[in-house]
Image (cartoon, rainbow, N blue to C red; front, side, top):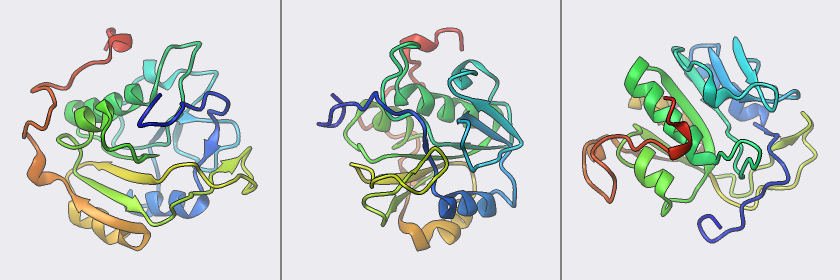
Length: 198
């Protein structure tokens, strides 16, 4: 269970809707350097893509200036990974390489991954107005609305640019005042047990 919901393990290939891909590209100045969890029908078209399930983006380098992440929301039983592993990599890539990162994830503010990798690590959140976001299925806009609210999370140094580009899509919250605070999180970025090699 996650945030009171059953984890969906049936689909790990929900594609980002084009309006959000366009917004991410505008925010990054026209191109996305890395999509670490792409899929065969993705419309993101990053310069470097690690395509699931063939390439495990959690085991590859994230040393890129701009990164967009729409991670698998469910459990990957084969690899034993969850969304927290992707968010851990977001926080580490920003801290280690200074990467600017945007991630489209479900709103689950009471979970460990939000407490450990977002509230005191990220710069900002945009809680999307699309309460039932329609993800692309196999690259087509034929899917049902998501069963949860979603948010765009930003790790980077330009809060004002994030606010300018994403305010039209939802409520933007500045997390900078929370950096370094203790709200039930560790002093250092906790490392998921499954990512010991990092």
